Image (cartoon, rainbow, N blue to C red; front, side, top):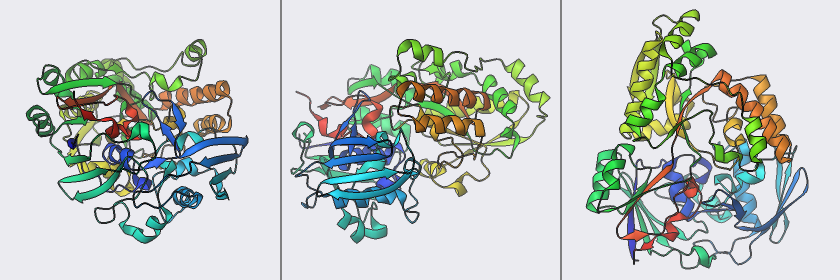
Length: 495
């Protein structure tokens, strides 16, 4: 087909892979840039720009780079490009959001014409997995050097190896990709000549654009429109694999929510079943932890059941919650809840959390931010100043619960509230340090027990990934892997 148009709920601030840690930039970059490994729609991992890899010692990873791959400017991929790209995650000057997965990396070095060796300071069971996500992205070393601070901007763009190349970016309006005919992988060669991403911040506008055919599709369909789109003649609403949990992030531990018992009381006072019914049309389940069950897929079912039993739980009980909060001294203290008018689901969650806060004796104030400003809560500590809670639909970037729990370790970039627990850190470190699946799972489960008692984040519910495909197009595999897998390449004309 000639082209298709896709909706985004917000405009990216950058498409530099070192800062790509949100739905808008990642779903674009997944089609333009590639990583050494690939995260597939079934949540498995396979070779990609690395044709193969080996782990000869617990602290050594060796990657054989695929020969004959070309960047969009026609230059050939080399080991030097891989080294330059990976080293950006280690460079304090980059200050990227993916530094944490590289925290145990001692060196990244060219060890052959098409070979790169990564040496770790100590064993790290998650490092290799992350190379299927943004941290494993490979860009042309020459492009990185030439573009400098313009890299990933509307002016500088990117120059990668994916099935689409960067064409143009009109700030405030749209970003256009064009098919790269020199793409190395015939199985994922783009079917469409062009993909145009339009920035539609208002959920009603997005849904109307689906219905009118103005846009051909979009991920993260506003849940308030599920019923409407299920019966639409304009296209089809699909659901698929997800690793996402809706959470309230406690971003200020110096205020009233600094006491774990207050956090427990607040979660107990939130009507999570009511949120699911009103916010997502019943398409979800109350979350009993901060991760989805499919992340434990490497663990035998019987073992998994034993590991996950006796988790602290917080069934809806506002009366009990109020008593617990009163014992801790809650008595009208103010908390600020940040939100953004992304869709009706977000509004319903925010209102429910505010009602719960009121129910336990707190005084909530809602601070509504634009979608773009809301995104900066995840990257800029200054943007979080004065905010006690903010909502996230937190996905994992690897099929491992440690992706979530590692993000709450002391000092992690994504530990937005600065929470710290030595027992939790020790459990995470044990899980990171072992390659044995059973020991890895046991340590991850120990970390989960602590997180569910201390509640640095409040888990609300899980829901499947959603995508709308207009009647002109077909081909998408509904899965959270769309953040790293070249999903747009599979979109073609409906026959």
